[in-house]
Length: 117
Length: 108
Image (cartoon, rainbow over all chains, first blue to last red):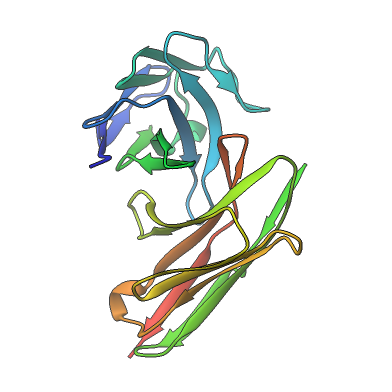
């Protein structure tokens, strides 16, 4: 149980284009979904917290107009990188929160590797 | 603010025991997670501690001391496949704040 999928797993795009990444919780309904970015040899940095039916909460320094998050249902959240530039090349990972048993655990998707040329 | 510290890298021998430490200073602390991450892959959940003490799960154990802001992950009977990055993360009001990760290399 607690499987999270991401699509696509990798994408190469030209500078200036937009890229959409999907995150799905396959066998549970996620109360909250999170989006992280990880640069090589660095740890995960939280970009935003997404709750179904409400606006995402962005971390300091993350441009909400550049990284659009839509959380249409309890099993799907999307991240759109608008007007991507080479510095946006990174490993984007989503996680879905599962509350219960007195704790909240996050289960991670397999990640999406983005390369902007 | 928050500050989470782990050693950058560690090396250990196959079959041995290794302890990876994590110290933290964070507001609104609500538990500490350990994740394992192999290169190019997403993190996988290892353990969660919210109360002081030791949680044992097979070859892996995790310890927490809230008063000291300290946790460790203990890996026993090391295997080559345990070579990975180990991430300590604090639950801060439902958000996970990650440390830099400890790159563990297991050698024969």
